[in-house]
Length: 122
Image (cartoon, rainbow, N blue to C red):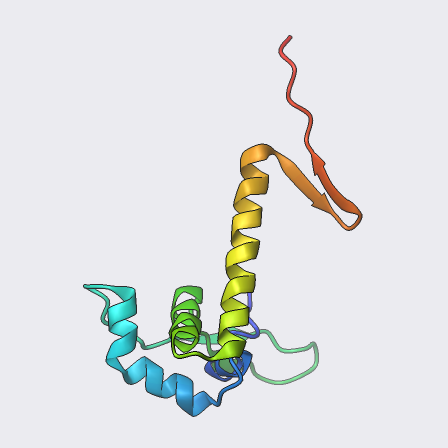
């Protein structure tokens, strides 16, 4: 499964910044401090994307893992980047909504939320 949109460039652009900024972050001590002790690698493996039928070869790009992308956005929010702050708020809100929905059996539809019926015992 290709992870389109998680390239270092896209991660930086989501916070309104350039790829150079995210590359500097990967080399900085900030990432190590956010990720905690024992974290050492910021080397990303190239991912291959399947080509369209009839085209030659495969495309490759560097994929930034979600934990690293979120650490970058959180760091940018900490540095008063308003785009990163809005992105983090949206991610936190959506994550909490999904967890609460799962805990209480809520299914979201385009028209609203419905609580799943409690299973009946036979």
